[in-house]
Amino acid sequence: MNQLTIINQGGQLLVDSRNVAEMINVRHADLLEKIDSYIQYLLNGEFRSTDFFIKSNYQDSLNRTKPCYLLTRKGCDMVANKMTGEKGVLFTAAYVTRFDEMEKQLQAGFDVSQLSPQLQLLIQMEQGIKKLEERQQSTERHIAVIQNTFLQRDDNWRKSINSMLNAAAFRLGGDYRELRSNSYKTLEDRASCALNVRLANLKKRLEENGATKTKIKEASRLDVIESDKRLKEIYTTIVKELSIGSLKTIS
Picture: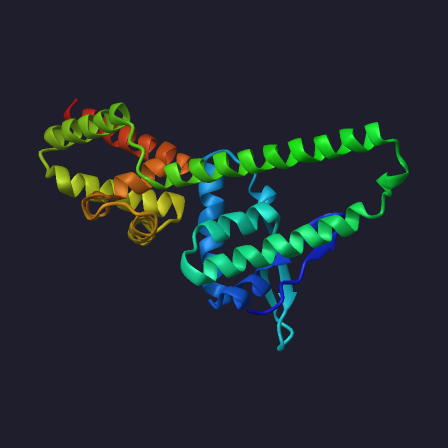
């Protein structure tokens, strides 16, 4: 496995996503796609994505500007947690070792050996507590991200949406399924999104995180909408507009 290079950026230790992709033997583009999905989970869970991944870029051999990410230690934790087998073990060993080495080098700039034994003990205790807190926070965030991957359904919201669509279809004398399909198309136009693409990505993430085949099969475009706060708000407005429009038609 290739050597992991740690970047010291203003005292913050980071790793280039190209270096990570090379170490774990995956295409850089594939790793970027996974990181993009992790960031979306973090944002949905109201975590700061920059605590894990920082957007950056580089110039390729043709002098083109290409995207990449700089991973913090927490970002490396997240990538490693998704890996299994020998690759995951070796990558974890590599980044933990390199980060520890760099952190010791940074700490070496302050010589604690000249302090009293009492102060040295206090510093060691503080560093130990800090590491424990960081590990706990990392674990809690990882659990939150995994939980957010599985479908969290708001039954009251869904009942409200279905009720409005059913009533509108009845008043218009049309087909409920056709009206729902049209509502999805309106959402795609208004939010500039592709629901089928997002649904395929959602099913892929569910599979990667151990969801059952039934759970994956049952995933729908409504799940995609509900998992994105912005889409949910826009879609709710669209359905309300359809409901009001159907009332005007019969009045």
